[in-house]
Image 1 (cartoon, rainbow, N blue to C red):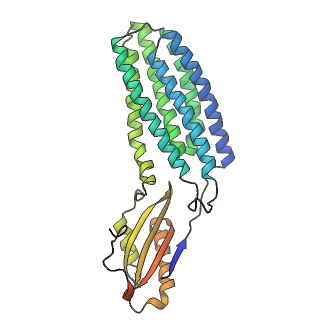
Image 2: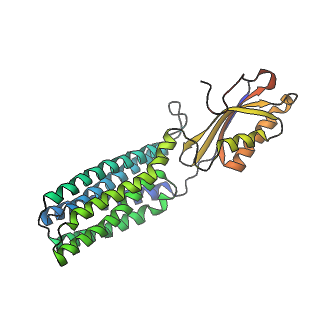
Image 3: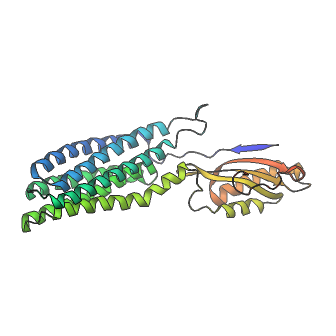
Length: 309
């Protein structure tokens, strides 16, 4: 049975070298900040500051993972990885989100523990180190902001830094509360709030990475609507065994069996080309594989989506 395969074009909205340089600078400043915050947290006795330091360290690690994933993703397809290496960035995003979950649970535990075992806190040291952290977080976020729009991988790292910038603001407020009112209990409260905020961000983003890796239907595409558009093409009797998924974050793909109307087999190639054009124009599905079946030899009782069980 005839079949055909079409390929979409890959887009790189930001020059690779410029993007790599930004990520490298972001890694450097976050490593510096982590060291400064750990030292400040130890000498000030602030758990919130150490929590922020751990989060900044996770920022640096996430950026390293993002940096490596960007390099891998640019490799061309080969005989071992025929779909290419683009999903390396999705894997990196999932790793980063998972580390955020683990980190947040640890901070929740430490924050609750500190309620029962309070420690003396140097409020001024907390404020000055947290202020430095805020500046570094904002610089890092600025370095990765543009790339975050087009890459799930970089977006995960960007969210690390955005959450950490807000965490630094909270730590400054905690240090101020110690200076002005002697409220040491604000420190563990801020730690718990930082952890809860990180988990809230992860909950909103991790599903997309899992969906891509699980070959789920791209968001915004209704499988039945796509199948209906295929069957609306003149000469198509039926479509079945439809698979609709994301090759990587922004590249939808489809495979399907196309049953040609009786008497239309002579123009099957034209029908196939028209189906591919419709998928590209209506749904931006650029990677398409179609297997053609004549009506007299079509699959019997096939599944409309996926494979027969």
